[in-house]
Image 1 (cartoon, rainbow, N blue to C red):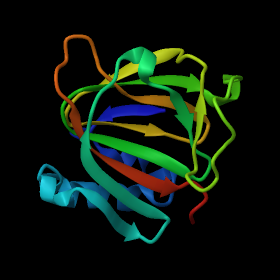
Image 2 (image 1 turned 90 degrees about the vertical axis):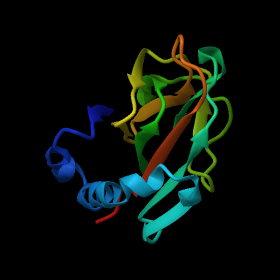
Image 3 (image 1 turned 45 degrees about the vertical axis):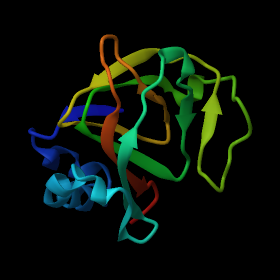
Image 4 (image 1 turned 180 degrees about the horizontal axis):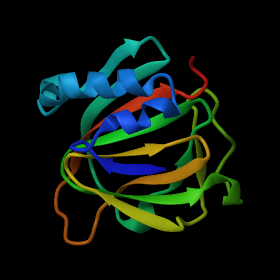
Length: 159
């Protein structure tokens, strides 16, 4: 898992995956547009290898947020507005799947509890790799309303 600010240099992450540069460049060139609800939905950048979903989200109580993990995609989640907390656990340590892995949706949910929580503010992002189980959409204490974010899906094995 990575948690950082958009104001810092994204170049430090380009070497982690061949599509990170393209994802961040797309993000920076469309960031103002993403604030507008007219941009809601899926935006294809490079077929199924790289796309982004933009929209508003309702936050949950911590006990309602389930850990999830993906096999095929890395999540780059960017907070356009609002504040959201994310639970995290090492996927290999999750031992209580809620159901079987859904290959069509590239997701599995776990009943396990997060081992840490990161709170992401407007202008910050998190990256979750397939080995990271994460519980999104947790309402931080004292926060009202929802969030608006861009969720980039980056195919883990893309070249």
